[in-house]
Length: 482
Image (cartoon, rainbow, N blue to C red):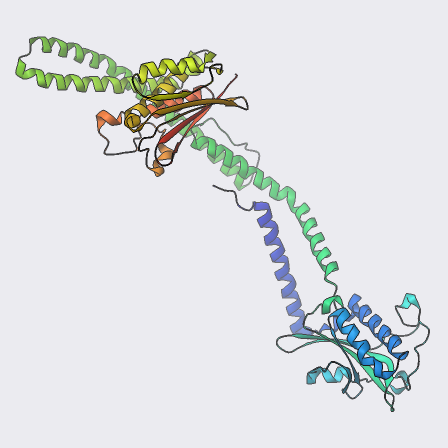
């Protein structure tokens, strides 16, 4: 299963969404309660930017003929991506691209400054101080406004200029219109806000890191232990360092692992004991059957042969159950030795697949240090399985190689394989992929389970996969050195 988005990222994203929703709710509440307009933006950098543009336009237009004003405004349009226009105090547009000004914006465009504060003639502005962003040091800021109108929304900003127009020296108002609230960066510069958001996100991430990291670490430990328990390693435990719900869960998982381990050990012990106890009565029955066969009539011999076949099958099943039970104790009963793999495989082929087409691709000098009997039984069971179900379909391939300190052995056949959904359970005890498989061909269902036990005793792992167009490949991976 592919890993999705980490919990930490999800928590951080959810926190960001939560903060955004809270900000929107607060802004909406203030809007309803205090009927806030966009004029509050004029108190920050946006207001200073509009004042600076107003002073720049005033200074530039003052020093050029009125017939060139339209071209100058056009240059501002292209430079900022915002429509620039000049209106007189009566709300009539006198310069710039024609704008459809909403009625509710007209009162703000009209210059309501007292006569003493309005320009009475076209005159150059007073000398400007760079520290005052275009205004004399003691001069108050000229009246400005910002407003959102219409649907779709349009955003307006304006400033009353120290500039008069026409024979009557009508004071002018500079109006800027944009489809975006940012006004191409003229009304609002988004980069400081983006930087603020990024800083808040980073600070939040650092503050939440210890808390979320503690949770994800505990979940990872639980996941690893659960994975180990699912694969039969019941000795796996989760550290019980937390005192919250995750700590309680760790305690429950440990208790479950302990109980499952005890239960499985009891089942294995019972199975081994029962199989061991069955050996004696089966042997006595075979001995008695031999005596009966010597005194039987020709009519009875057919039934006695069937009975003998059943006893042999029972004896073989008991033997496999005992082998399966003993496989787990192989590391304690056998000492690892140096094994020349090609020699071992050739011996197994002679024993299990004499006269069957087997292609061996194993380097002559390939060796590994592991349990001889365990590896011999594992390879023999896999090869026997391939011969039983796929010898008629084509040659069986045995391949081995060493990579990164591991020996990889692959046994592949060209038979019908198994249904894809059965692959995860293929190495379970007594599991047979085909329910309708006959007893004489299907075996006991312990062959591959014994393979898994033997390979795990060699400190390795075993997997199976389907081949195209048909066939099954069993791969065994074992450490080359102990």
